[in-house]
Image (cartoon, rainbow, N blue to C red; front, side, top):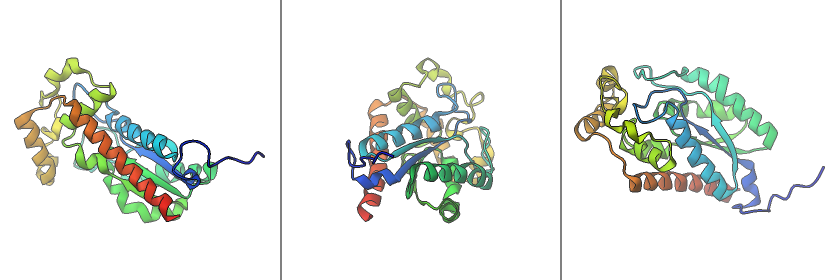
Length: 232
């Protein structure tokens, strides 16, 4: 068997090959008229891949499944326990076995995946990997299917701008800003605040905003990887 040249190419250090980056988003949830149902997965995958290209860490692709809070109904999702046990842990175990990893950074692009954080200890124990949960893009992108996601989608080329005029027809697309998801608004004050923002301001394309959000998220993932490599 040939000896692998771990130091070759533009890598932060040879150890970075023991770090994987896995995007977790959502492939099956409505995002209004102008965005596709896999918006979150596309955004998370882009951020994860760019961080991989810059650092040399292993890009592991995207997890197919996602979870969601029970009071939000805008797609098809698994229960958190099912996602973790049946999808995430087997994926991580396979990656560790094939690539001899020590760490995996989970790049989350879907707010409904936040409950996964409650299972990090279990995930680490069963996968025999150290896990970092990076939630930066969720923290900064704003309302669901709102200006933030619209702007990122425009920048990456998967926005249907011809449908922007109907995007905020909330009777038809209640998930935009979660304006029409009454139960979610009653239960979660943060969701209600975002919904009011979209009701009052609508949505628009802001290419500078989209670029800034992506850059911020990518830099944050790179920082996670640099901390891992620096500690080893």
